[in-house]
Image 1 (tube, chains in turn yellow, purple):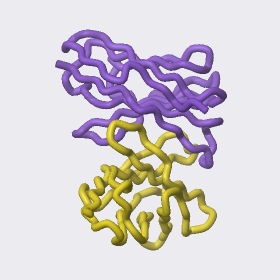
Image 2 (cartoon, rainbow over the protein chains, first blue to last red):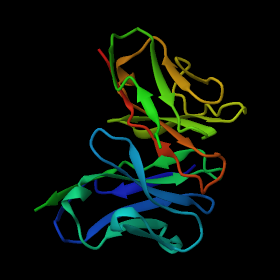
Image 3 (cartoon, rainbow over the protein chains, first blue to last red):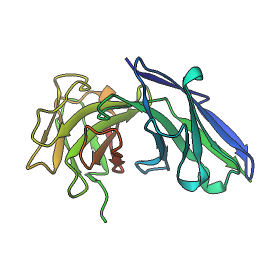
Image 4 (spheres, each protein chain N blue to C red):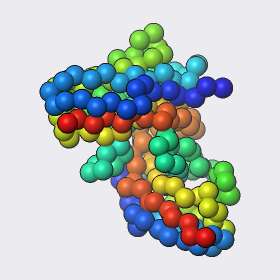
Amino acid sequence: AQSVTQLGSHVSVSEGALVLLRCNYSSSVPPYLFWYVQYPNQGLQLLLKYTSAATLVKGINGFEAEFKKSETSFHLTKPSAHMSDAAEYFCAVSDLGGNKLTFGGGTRVLVKP
Amino acid sequence: GAGVSQSPSNKVTEKGKDVELRCDPISGHTALYWYRQSLGQGLEFLIYFQGNSAPDKSGLPSDRFSAERTGGSVSTLTIQRTQQEDSAVYLCASSLAGGKVIDTQYFGPGTRLTVL
């Protein structure tokens, strides 16, 4: 069975500082990995996805993530936080068919001015 | 174009009543998914429809939950004899073809269900 662990349910960063959200996965087969963002009272929006091409994946809004098989990690980063980045972020892994997403517990990001 | 829409946006019901939640996927998307987001369990997969194939119901938590998809488009999630632990946000998503890892799932805004 697949699982996803996100370290830290809440992260507080200063505006302009680095954003680092951690995600580790457990999968018996090569995984497909995703980061989604959820703004208050809205659905999930895809930030980026890893589908076994380049290990460094660039997404929307300046976010990127690096797939590290040796560490079973897919951490999300953004060099400089913006107030608009305040939201909840979810890491997810899909089954081989890409039909079912298994989500981590989410990390809520607070950006301080 | 229009995204995934869900109705109602909020639903309050009494324990023991049945509820129906509706999802309109993006036009042309053949795959449709239901997920549940709750404080205790996080985001969980419930059910998946792909074209005319039999749905994957492996995530449904009990036989009180059922879903159908009519005409390959609109889907209804039905919860019978609601319990307080059913209180959650129910999210619907659709993707172009399903079964392909490169397909992105597009999510609706969700229906917040509160069972009193």
